[in-house]
Image (cartoon, rainbow, N blue to C red; front, side, top):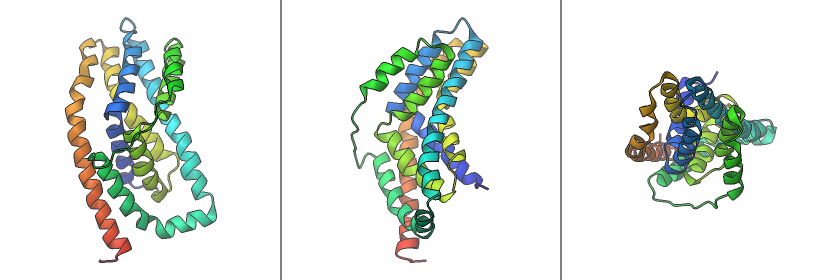
Length: 228
């Protein structure tokens, strides 16, 4: 059974991903798609849920391929069980430094995703699901660092190829759900919720980065240098 702390960790990684500048922009694009259905609140809610499910499915597919594939190869699985804690320290420190903007990485944009996303906006509820799936795969530096550097090692440690990636995906879609539900209830002004997330994102990312570095140093001292 996966420890609740790892499940919460996966959710927090997803939420932090969702409010980072690049993923937040894709969520705003999804919100604009949902906002066109203000006159049909239930449709807005279904679109929000479909978008979130699309993101979750994308990350589950990646989790099954990466985590499931690695764990099903006996030699690699045994190696990870033996040395994963030694790798976790440096990985957490690097991800923490990235979250604090001490390390900068640039990933090339993929115009194909943009074109497909624009076309999907005309497909109704299946289009919302497709947008979520597509946007989840269009990694930017922050989302790539949090998923591959933060979630995947923890999922390997917890031997979770489905649950943790799925919860991570739900976390990345929560801002859209947070807006879609009030829209469904008729509170249209809640569509401005994204305007208040930028300041929270900055401090949440910095605090998480510091925590990552501290935990990483602990792992390095404990499992590499064996201080304790």
